[in-house]
Image 1 (cartoon, helix red, strand yellow):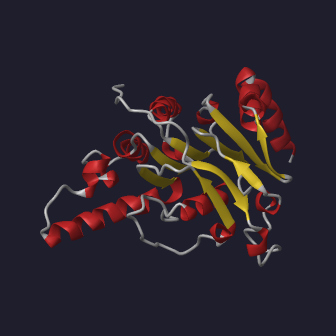
Image 2 (cartoon, rainbow, N blue to C red; image 1 turned 180 degrees about the vertical axis):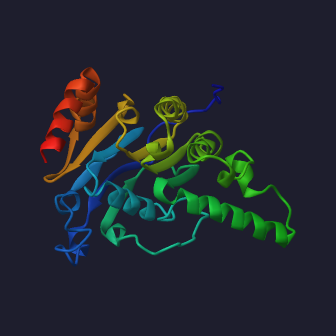
Image 3 (cartoon, rainbow, N blue to C red; image 1 turned 60 degrees about the vertical axis):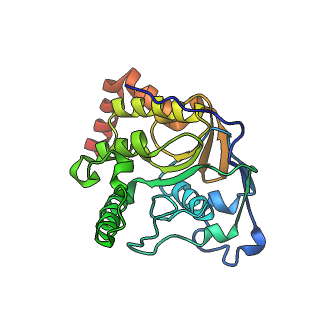
Length: 264
């Protein structure tokens, strides 16, 4: 896989975030009632990669979305230039968050939300049609994604078109379940791209279930659970332990699961 040469810069863009409890007006309601939010005080970002991991419904996407909104990004995904709304559903959590940032600003920023990337692709086509009608000239927006309609590619190919063509050095990238459309092989290839972007000075915050992606070594892993958020090592995540146990003896695991299912 061809790799672009990226120029690094010192320091991260996001340093930490803090929940401002005096701005929480409904602590017994969503999203403030989520354990991850209820117990949140201050969370430190890794200068390269920060992972949010945990079970469905633990609050990973909710908190990541709030960070994206605080960074001026569209809650449904895209760069700062996207402002479409398919269905207003994001929480007001961002209003209660304070982000501490480095003095240097990112040269680029983007929020990938796997569940709504289809809507981003649709908005790209809309914007390009409107720009063409305006007669102003200049390259279409889709050129930044490889020049081929994202709707004319598989879900996984469109994700990789974003990673390979749109992302760059010195960027801040927030990603919600980037593995959703990627095969295991593509996830490994994504790790190589991730490393190149990190060497080029980019910073990532990623919510993921993938034990492949969260294996990236230069990272900080936060587990979202019933007791709030705690930092852990890769080998201590449930994702790693469960996957390792299954792959070490899939027959035994399946036998136990299927026997229990038949009993039920």
